[in-house]
Image 1: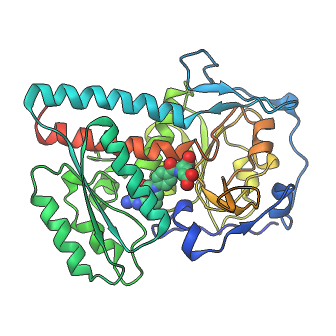
Image 2 (image 1 turned 90 degrees about the vertical axis):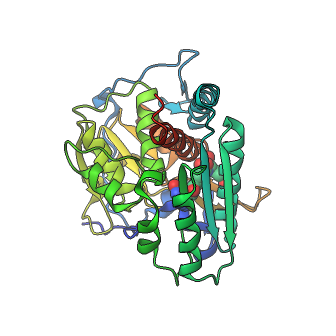
Length: 367
Ligand SMILES: Nc1nc2c(c(=O)[nH]1)N[C@@H](CN(C=O)c1ccc(C(=O)N[C@@H](CCC(=O)O)C(=O)O)cc1)CN2
């Protein structure tokens, strides 16, 4: 019986929250995939001849799914999230301009950053740039780390009332003295472009109810599957991780798409026995290279949400980013894989733009 190596960030954090301040950089090397799962009970990999197939639209020039070029033994298609995100941004640019021409309204996004985490500051900067690139107005508030909850709430309440703001986002994680729940609850459900308000999540969980917004990262995962021609209906899907912002909503979304869902988490016994049955795996735990070849059914589709820094002296930054999934091994056994970086990450921001545009359309009754 193997014990789980990953922690799950079941309150509200996810892989990409962790890196730079809370945890030290993780060290790995040439054989990193092997080292990280040492204590696990490893079973022999399933024969490739048992390979099942999912419908993956192949590498036509217009498809975002392109063939892997990793050499012998590699068969997976690489799902290029950067390319898909660019296509989506172009679509949004056209819609923003159509809306402006028709009714003179420009969508607006307000982003609030508390504290000086470097990674959060980078994400906020990238969101601002992305807004500029599609013609969405952005409003940024930066508050010092020691701000009070009330100061932050005052900005949120102001944006709730501001008609030029159609989306409000509070960059997470918040400093530990702040109560994330009460902050997220304060965002108007109609401007909750992150989709983190409990009413939006509740609606996502209920049959026959529609959330106004779906959280950006899980929405990006599903969008990648759709745009890569991967059929979800009727498939077995496993989500690794049960965070509020990725794992849980990803499972709800897959269920809405008529997949049969299992959720694997830090208390799951023998997770690889469950993941090995999956046609689709979405991993969001923040453990570098945790998912190994023998966790993956031949032909499965792998969506890797983890963005984990590992030490790398050769990189100018001193580290490089790897996913939750051992990419080299997944490429050998899966039918399609998202890379890290360049997979789900860019889709998170594209979905934020998409949610902001939808919000402006809804608030102004523009079809
Ligand atoms: N309020 C929110 N806070 C946070 C969210 C969120 O969706 N809403 N998600 C994450 C961070 N995040 C956006 O905020 C985010 C993380 C990573 C990327 C991305 O494009 N990553 C690149 C790699 C970037 C690099 O080289 O450093 C990639 O994967 O290719 C986009 C957005 C936590 N907080």
